[in-house]
Length: 223
DNA sequence: TTCCAGCAAA
DNA sequence: TTTGCAGGAA
Image (cartoon, rainbow, N blue to C red; front, side):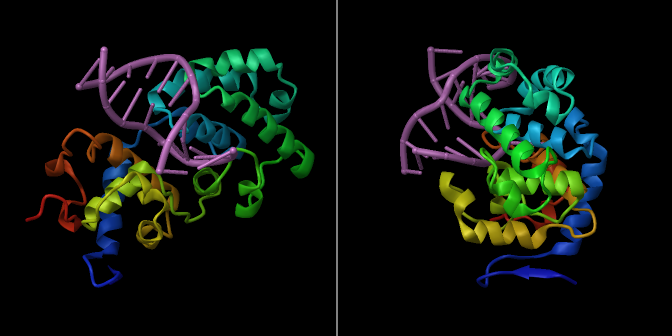
């Protein structure tokens, strides 16, 4: 019975938490294009696009993008103006340059293959902890913790922690998120967390706790 | 800690 | 019209 208990705070039955979450996640899985592939290149591209950008906004751009650049060598040969035109609707225009630099780096230092090691990924321009972890989890199924605005919100609510903008850099949050990752099916687990954040555990709108699969583990709303 | 930058939902 | 978004870099 894997109990999680840090600093004498709230403790949960981690095994039950994961079971409930993943059963729910299987049912409500959002089948985005970048989720039905294990190609690390495609997953990396998606993660870069999802950076501070809604999935619904990414969908049409991603589709068009991979039609033009189905693999990394076609992207490496891309014309700059065509690339920025495709990426334009996403905003954050510095993404174009970063993506070019990232691509060139993968070609130059890793022979055009997206590296599998965490440190190698994090050495790429535009790639830090979140994207490196996401690629490793979704492409190779490594049990990586994903620390982003969504997982911070869910885990923060479960453990009754105050959630601030800076919480995603808080080691305590990172520890809690890491200690709950499922080690048998990490990909399924992390997708379920992101889907739960989108469909139930809303940020601004009041979360729909009555429909939440992990309600019994969660301190949110408990008196 | 602050900026990023277009878009869609509210 | 305002608000907030699958983070990273400065």
